[in-house]
Length: 138
Image (cartoon, one colour):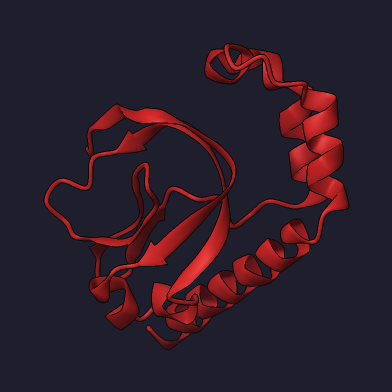
């Protein structure tokens, strides 16, 4: 039932994210560092509908809690090299990315070669692990 709206601009690739004070106190996202570099790929965002963001980038809210055991994140903690290869193979389906003139092959090669992806995947595993702990404890 949330409203989806176009964000201020495309947010694709690695970008800085910071926890808000609410995020630092949240049982899930508080497992992340106060500031971190996240991977994102979106032109749209969910309106948090009055809920305080738990994390934000310069472009948009990045994490919101919707209930006692329901969270939403804008960044992409699930990415792996295989997922990115699939996304970049289908890059033509995203008109916002196409409009940038991005060389998908070169961008993917750079992304897979650098250390940031491995670091981000470790944070994603941490977040998923915390979520599983909360779900089992709940």
